[in-house]
Picture 1 (cartoon, helix red, strand yellow):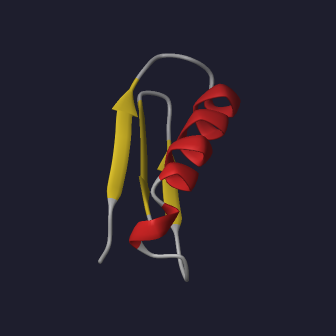
Picture 2: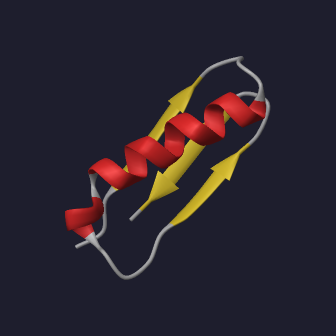
Length: 48
């Protein structure tokens, strides 16, 4: 079953990418076969 993570922050995209990757890794049990992420100037989203 899929899981979603995300947050809103004004940090630079590199910092948000590192954080969202850690969040995605925390829910690896929700779907170890695939993942995705979206990061822009305001929001970071991920799924597993």
